[in-house]
Image (cartoon, rainbow, N blue to C red; front, side):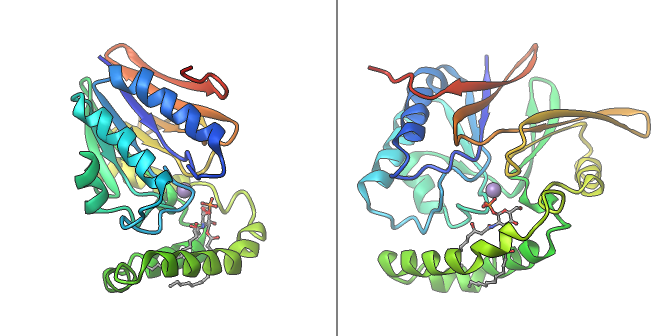
Length: 245
Ligand code: LP5
Ligand code: MN
């Protein structure tokens, strides 16, 4: 009995090493799990569910093959795949969850999220997020042909690239008060998220109660997987270059 968590793979056609590690993970590991949770930023950028490229088809078919075997797969949108929606889920059998979700893990309650919403000191990003999450804007954007949307995204990405480079690492990390607030409003002692690319297990005490925040790693140089079973959790790495063949 195992539940797996991954995030921040940033899958893209130009990084076949990441895709290969992901495919191996899906076919050899996820297939034996009870459930798989993808906590956002699966893709380098997801322009929309109307993506008909062979790469998008390949990733969709990996998820479909997995859910067809009976593994439950859940997805929380990240800041790079907030446009992944109902159609992707229908085509793959994946269940889309709310941005912040409370789950039960072998007797322990946990709150799971991508993690960008915890970075409240990054005021410019939070304003940007509010804009691109406006339902009317997404409704309009989703009606534009895919290749035009792709061009718009590339333009916005290059316009704001320098903006991120100007920010301090502190500003781009989670705000501890916000972490505590989310733990307490959800009435849980465990939080699992990604986004910051700072894999770690943080233990701290609030009002005499032990709390744990697990941060998943990115997949730039190796895979990062959190395995959870009734005896506990383990944040592990998966080296690149171990293909199926
Ligand atoms: O993922 P990572 O770590 O690299 O960076 C994130 C934050 N950056 C982003 C940007 C997206 O990846 C790129 C989005 C392109 C979207 C195009 C959308 C087209 C319209 C869709 C309409 C439905 O998420 C980064 C954080 C970092 O995490 C750490 O938390 O700092 O945030 C930024 O860099 C954002 C800038 O600070 C915001 C600058 C404001 C620019 C305003 C442009 C308005 C464009 C409006 C588009 C309609
Ligand atoms: Mn992210």
